[in-house]
Length: 151
Image 1 (tube, rainbow, N blue to C red):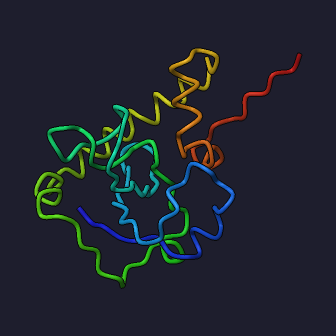
Image 2 (image 1 turned 180 degrees about the vertical axis):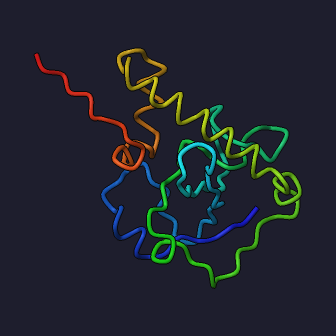
Image 3 (image 1 turned 120 degrees about the vertical axis):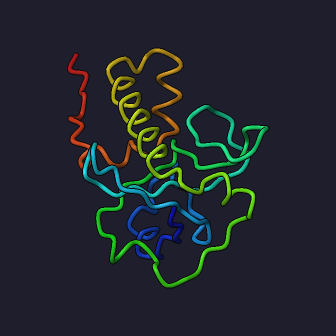
């Protein structure tokens, strides 16, 4: 699994996005959903995760790759820092080693769940998923048509 930092240009472009992890020194795992959407996603490593949408790296299920904060990378050259070396803990690295396909499938499932939640946003669990997910900023890239209430 490859870890990178996102560039200042990425954070500048998405500065208005409140749910985005804005620490420029936070490593993101870049993975491509080749069989699913043909896009590159960056998924941040986080601690203090308090939901199920993650690939956990510890027994307590508080650290790992947070799928709810995944972002679409639509300009790899511009938004991914491939020069700065990323260091993560040995323990996390060992848990994530060789899990690229598993992460892709888990992210694909999360995206499907997000799209399904959009159909019933008034259900409390869906409302929470939608509110805290960074996918809300990438509807165009995910081919999600805006649902408008015309009453």
